[in-house]
Structure formats: C-alpha cells, structure tokens
Length: 110
Length: 113
Image (cartoon, rainbow over all chains, first blue to last red; front, side, top):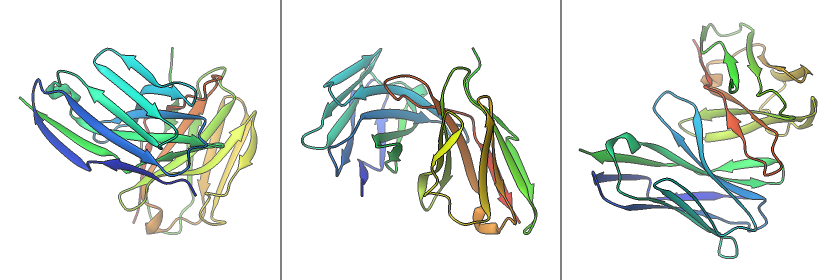
C-alpha cells in the first residue's frame, strides 16, 4: 500500500528566506507526482506536476524535484513571501489513485 | 475558462437526512474523482469515473454512499442516511490530460448534526 509522508509538518520562516519542503513515498511505481497548495477553507491548487520520467519542474519561484528510485521529492520555494503561507500537499498518482501526504503548514512572517 | 464547479459550497443537515453533492468537471475532461478531507484521515479518494463509468469505488466507506455520473458534465455523490461522522469537506476533481494532472473544485463543507 502506497504511503506518502511529508516533513516537516509545520514550518515558520521570515520573509525572503529560501525553503525546502520534503515528500517521501514508499512505492516507486508511480505515474506522476503533484504538488498542491491549499489555503484555509479553500480547495486545492495544482502547483507543479512531475512525470515519473522527469527529474524536476519549475514554475516561477517554485522548483520541484523527483528522485523516483529513492522515493523522494522536494519543493523548493525561493525568496518566500507572506502570500506563500498555506498548506502544501504532495500527492503521487499510484495506478488510478492520487495518494496524498498529510501536508506541510507553511507560515511566512513579514 | 471555468474550473471544476461544486454545489452546494456548504451544507448543514440533521442525522438521517439524505444529502446530495454535485459536481461539474472541466469541459473535455474524461476522468472525475470524488475525495473526502478530514482532520483525522486527510484526503482520501472515494470513487473514480472514467468516461462516465465508475472504475474504482473501493474508497466508498459504506453502502450509505453512492455516486453517479449520468453524463460527461455532471456527477453526484449521495449520502443516505447521513451520520455525524460523515462531516467533512468533499472535493470533486477532474483530469483530461495525458499527464494525469488533476484539477480540484472548491469543495463542499458538509456538517451533519
């Protein structure tokens, strides 16, 4: 059974700092990996999708990497801003199912 | 370009009542997913449709839950009878790209008293 773990569970940083969120999964036979953002009381916004054959994807200040063999992904956020404060969720597409981690709650202090 | 649309956004009902949640996927997407989010269990897949056909309903918790997709632009998730432990946020998502990227609706927050 696929399990996804995200570390840390919560993170508080000052504005401007670069930061890394970690995601690990137990079964490397995934189709893709998606990073989402969820604001309080809101839905999920897709940030980046990495296919299993890819190593990384970039969008603006965000960079996500994937090491399928070791079952790990990282989300790098450069020059963090207070508007980046949210919960960040990692999910792997395992067969037909997206299996989610519990998320990392990020707070960027101004 | 409209995203995934869900209604209602909030639903408060009493135990034993029937609840129907609705979803309109992104036009052209051929896969639709229903998820449930709770503090205790996080996000869980309930059921998955492909081309309007239910493919995997192993996540549906009990027979009280049922889902239909009568056409490519509409799906319902029904709970009958509802119980307080069904209180959660229910998300609908759709996918239509080869890469398998899923796009989520805003969710329905269900409270069963």
